Length: 90
Image 1 (cartoon, rainbow, N blue to C red):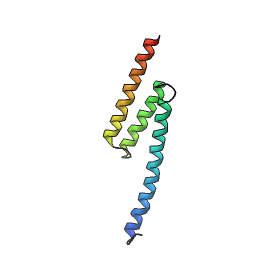
Image 2: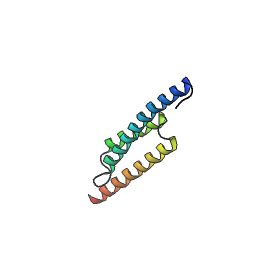
Image 3: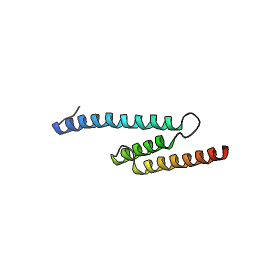
Image 4: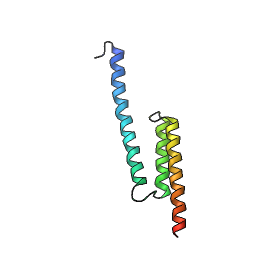
């Protein structure tokens, strides 16, 4: 229980932000699972959408900037590996 008006307000603000941040993180996780699901990387458009969402989350401070860069690097690495595998299969 907050002792002052300002502490009560900070508590309300924290609850609102936590809810918003949780929804963004959930959306990122779902997008990542859909991109990686069913046998590797899907089309470049979905990967680009995921990279854009990761960038926006990092810009807003929901995930750390280095964590966003690491996720994007892993996505690009998997995408290029998938493209090389597809080229060999043809």
